[in-house]
Image (cartoon, rainbow, N blue to C red; front, side):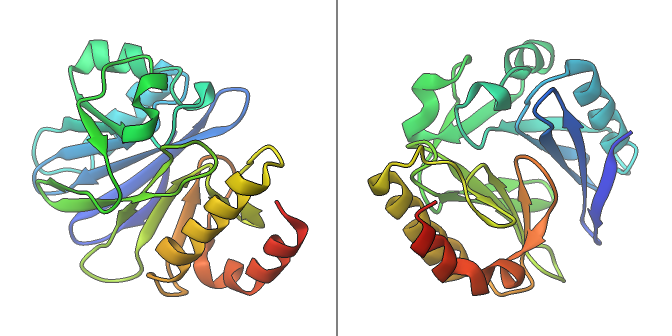
Length: 216
């Protein structure tokens, strides 16, 4: 069973945790049109099929998977991607600097600030360089309430993602997170990471100086 993370007038957001690394797969479904975007086809194809079906039940029209969006190229976030593309024929999107590392052809290579328009909602791509060169967070802003940031492995409760103790990569990631997330979105913004529980920018903002001082 999926977990219903959010519901508003236009959209439902569901999630399921899959695989040995407890990867979060997220699904946005437009209630009126049935348009769906799945974020990170990480693993466990049957669980993803159930997630799509449960999202489809939220819609008034027949559901259609409009896009499979990948946050970054790491293997644990793409294990079910080939199978899902083969079954659905859905288009794929990922950061332009990560496309070479994905197991499928990427239809939409994303740059920072790109906006995807679906039938009932939009998603904005936020490029966060450091965990991987092309890591992308996807942002949904509904008709009311806080924005939702699907941050992949770039931002978690308690810190930014792994940069292998590389000072340049850490500086790049922390800078992008500060400028492109904390500098743009308010404290009530919800952050849904690639593993583990959600948080808010407000809960994490006071700790930015600590993250910078510790270097990871």
